[in-house]
Image (cartoon, rainbow, N blue to C red; front, side, top):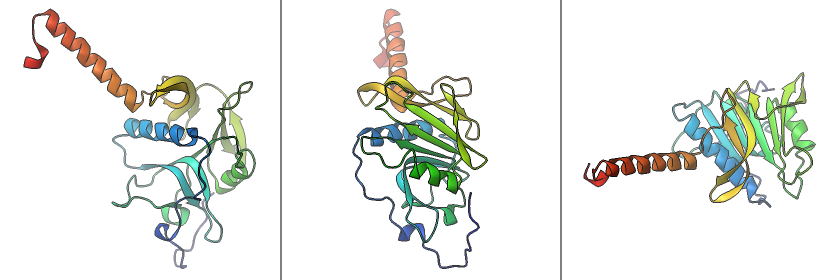
Amino acid sequence: MLKNYNLRQCLPSAEDLPDSDDIPVDNELQDLIPSLLKASLALIWSERLDWFFGIDMGIYYDPEKPPIVADAFVSLKVPRIIDQDLRYSYVLWEEQQVPLLTIEVVSQQRRGEYSVKKALYAQIGVLYYVVYNPQRRRKSSLEVYQLIGGEYQRLTGQPIRLAAIEIGIGVEIGTYQGITREWLYWYDAQGSRYLTPEERIQQEQQKAARLAAKLKSLGIDPDSI
């Protein structure tokens, strides 16, 4: 829950605070999965300027405590772009909006995704908490929790609808940057997966190729048009 910060106090600004914990990732998926989700969301919400998607960025929730660094998070009702230097970090007493969604990608070296981080996100008031564990084979690799009565309760389904964000999230086999595996994707209200930027480009290229072939079949050189 967002605290009522006294803005008359001499509180540090985003420019004064480090943007991450400088701990290197030990799994490439910790970079690739958030990057895919961010690029896809930028396409889905291309006409909106009231959202922010942070990757490996410090969330400062208390001036006296170190930040919590999420692999990814989504906030609404905040400026998409603050200025030309963009955000250094995400500071709650400046943003005045708690992230609605945080995402953690579990690697071989656990970082409190199921304990410390989960408890802290609940304390801060993050509505949705997503944990993706690519190493799981017997259990579901994706867990989505919603904060209800101060505690996280697991949501079920595939994909899982995030009502407050008006979007769904789920897992599916696909190809990203030439890598075919299970990825996290966004889904619409009907449960259909949104295309990624790469897939949009491929779709347009296929349409152009079909059109060129049609024109050629009619004796028209597409390059002459």
